[in-house]
Length: 164
Image (tube, rainbow, N blue to C red):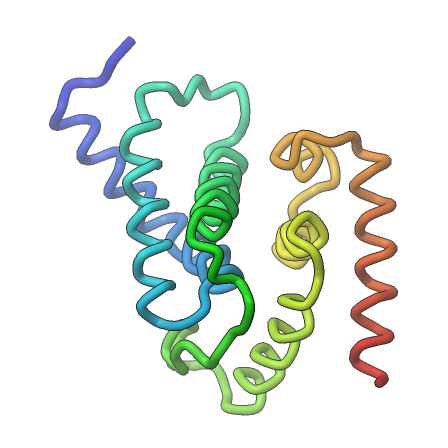
């Protein structure tokens, strides 16, 4: 059943507030620069808005938001063919309370993660947000065992990259 326009707008605004960090994090992982980040975020928000009536609540809202964000970013970057390098986007993407050291470490970690293939990158991102394996499997459309295998290999790759 479709929501009334006013209900839909309120629901959308609540989703944006509640899941803004998730959306930003996914967009950050796929963006080349701040302009690209803003474009990706806008595309995600458009797709969330357009998909609200189709959200059947079979999965958690957070799962659905991740799926929309990841699919939007992957599709957008594939179309744009701009996924070759990454720059520092902004020191303000994370809360102002974060220490400079934390921000530096986070940036370095994302730089390593950005070197992974798209599937491993998405799985690591979800894992870092403590999303359960079953939910990652649902978001990515793969089995739980495949999630575990990809995660294990991605962690090994990240460890090797960090030590080299």
